[in-house]
Amino acid sequence: MSASETKVDYVAVAKKVAETVAKNAIATDEKGQFPTESIKALRESGLLGLTIPTANGGMGLGKTAAVAVLTILAEQCASTAMIYLMHLSGVEGVLTAPATGAFHGGRRGEVLAAAASGKKLLTLAFSEVGSRSHFWAPVSSCTKKGDEFVLNGKKSFATAANNADGYLVSSQGSAGKGVNVFYVDKGHKGFSSTGAFTGLGMRGNDSGPMELKDCSVSGKDLITADGEGFGYMLGILPMFLSGNAAVSVGIMKAASEATAAHLKKSKFEHLPGADKTPTGLMDLLNLRARFAEMNVTTAVHEAFVEKAAAKVDAGAADAFLAVMQAKAAAAEAAIKVTDLAMRTCGGAAFNKSIGLERNFRDSRAAAVMAPTTDALYEFISKSLLGMPLF
Image (cartoon, rainbow, N blue to C red; front, top):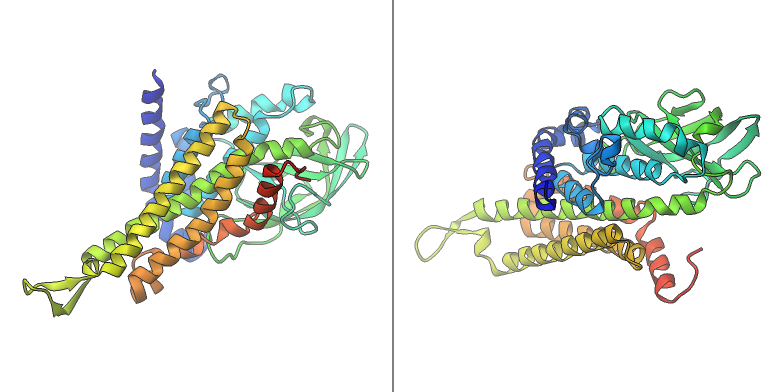
């Protein structure tokens, strides 16, 4: 099968899943409920294995494919797309487990095969109450007891907290220094969700708090050497950052499509034109200009995100810089585009009748999602100036 045929396949599959996602999007947002049917469609489609090697039952594709699928899903439901992004990030963490660790030679293959078959939805449990958006600096404690590690701490946000099947969980190293990352299955004793998500946007992504309370984890599930997980965590970022940017692009595309539909159908019936037909909103120059700006901004960032993802797939030296730039830029652009959409469509956009209100709220998440835009600007400037990031 050629590369082009492979691309048609996963794009077609994603568009088919997006039909189910679209049917559930409004209820997911209004009720703040986990999109169970949409995730079921993803499980059955094989897309949970998009980036998993074919040897483990997956499709064996890279970041370019991931951003394409995420954009398609986010156009319909940002909550579903975010859940899928965190799954792909979890998969990335399992894929990149150091070959010298016990996890790599044991559980890694089992987890990948289960994810590829749709049986395991993965996520990350990195962000903590004590270190806020500095997810790379966990304060959860870790004590070594024989062949096991006992974890205690509080996670502030874990997407799909109540619904994931497997979690990558961070803590301090057992000596109180460095970082550990463990793989933990759903229902593991001592690791539980402690609340529901009540966010402004992405209301169905189940990004709730979790707690580690005397949680004993086997040394076989320690993904890296004790205390050496910091660099490993950063290695998951290219997937997360490029994927997060793709979600922002999907939101922008959805807002542009909704705006176009509103401009085409809405009329000033009391203002007939020269041909005696009502003047349409799309006849107004200022509204067309705003819509054009939305469209151009969306197209620019879609191309930028695709280029950044391609750099990661190609192993380019500046790939990490590119995905940091892409996430920061797309997050801010989504806020701009959805704001323009609201202004272009006026009062009709302020309620839920044309769908823009959801896009407007969902677009706000990326800028404050770790690494935040402010944090990324700091990392980008340091990278460009040749300074250490940490």
